[in-house]
Image (cartoon, rainbow, N blue to C red; front, side, top):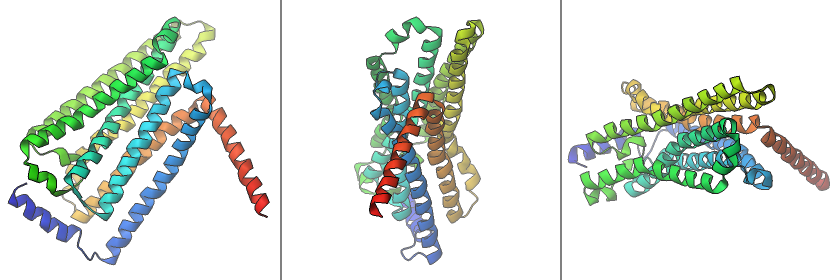
Length: 325
């Protein structure tokens, strides 16, 4: 980092994060942290209920469809936890040691890239179930599903790890002893990195969109030619794939979010932070919340068992309350 950047960061630190911040700024920070914490706790409770339901019911364990779904929930929990830690850290201590920032960014970026790939696998599983039902048990086994998920994690790690390798080449080792504002473009230390990132985003999402379109078309054709008894399951399948397309659009918000930076440039620094915070809540929290919740409540088996667990919880809660009386 050159002397000009150091001077800029020193000035930004004094203006944006003064050591004795006004009371209003401190209150605003507390409100932001409290709001994020509340949304995080609510989302984690719902996802925790979904995970608990999966773990308690053996019938889900041997079904690749539910394994892929619960992996998506686990991935959302993981990614949301990392982004929550980063958001709280940024509110309390804006300048983060470079190794800590890069470690958190690798986890966050990998989790974000994993979501669309997981959706692609879920769409393919539904395609095989409807269009090749006789081969479904052979192709969609749990070991093969686990291998496919492992491959998605390797692929998801590539963008962040490649960025880190580039940073090692363009920056001196002393850079890793400094502190930076930890955000999505903190990896960008060379002009060509933004081009590389855009190309990888296009490749990732084009691949998943092709899978979604291919599977939807195949299932739709199968539904048209199916017998009356099979039309219902085929219709549910292509509605499920259509839902995956909606989920994919929600996950794309994460990658489209940096494009909004051009609208924030003219804002004062304080308002830029507020806009980024609002964007974070909608893109990182609400999108993950809706994605897993809608799919979980839509599935009949999950919905039935969730209701059963909620009834048991309510009975236990009321019995404990009566005992205290």
